[in-house]
Image (cartoon, rainbow, N blue to C red; front, top):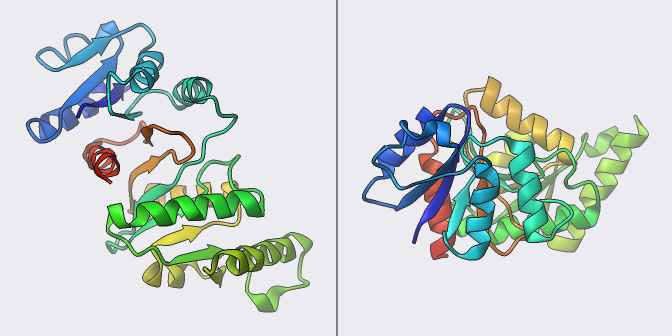
Length: 247
């Protein structure tokens, strides 16, 4: 097995990850020729457009899984959508609170999870992955308020109605707006929509001392783990990719 990882900005963080994982999981870096000195002595592919090279290698079978690493989001995910032949990507983020509570969260892309069917699709995929991440597959769907808030605002009413429908169709729990309770007893959390899910992710990981371990793309037939360029270590994403490969 070989896992590809992209290095764009901050290539030193990718090099550090390769050093940490050396000997345990084979890694191949995809990066710009300008970074040749940084990855001297490592298994590396130097291309002017490394995001394209990473995606092509994944779908040609040259690598068994891919991690975005510090490559730019827009161009990398655009290449992934084009080569995979999908109109949008669905991602499930593996997160950890500052207290050490781990859970899967979706949707996390602002254009994801806006319909009941999309939320159910993400929930089903997250439940399937949960055992590989060591969390329970018990799922909770969130809404924009408590049941007692019905009638306060049409948007809140819609999120509650959607959550009740998702819960009824999947057998999951409607946790209302109480995410702080939901994460203590559920391994899968479904946000009301992509914007709120993205805000949960950013608040937890960028303000609240939480950790983002990576976000596998679940609607393609290859293993691709999305990451943040701001990360200083992608080791956990490597282990996610490895776990999904062995699942």
